[in-house]
Image 1 (cartoon, rainbow, N blue to C red):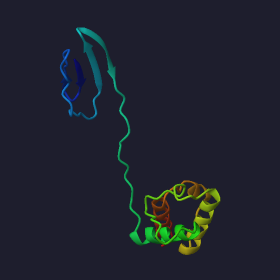
Image 2: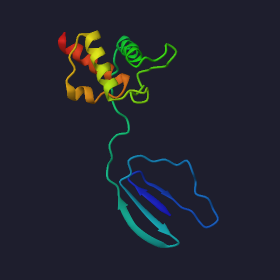
Image 3: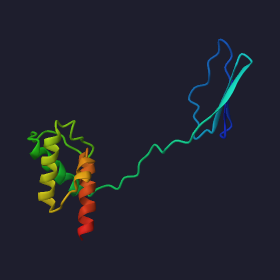
Length: 139
């Protein structure tokens, strides 16, 4: 027998019987377990961070320009697929390539990227969002 407090869920299984599957709960605060009449101490669960991240989407035209610049800087073929989710490392970029990509973005968009911001860019989407923020500050 297992019980999960806060959402009032408990499961029981006897020998030679299967436990009901597909049962889900969210945000339990504690779990206790009993097997063959033997009780085990309850476990108090710590809250964890959210699974979803809120991201402000960059303008589609910014993402497309960044994709084009990345393709050019990495000398990728025209039929190569580069999307907002594309990671520079997965496209074959090393640290020098990433610096050249950032320089190309600075030139194309007329912005200056701080070194700490440049180091946090790992995807095309990251770069596009940073560009939109910098352009918004300039306006």
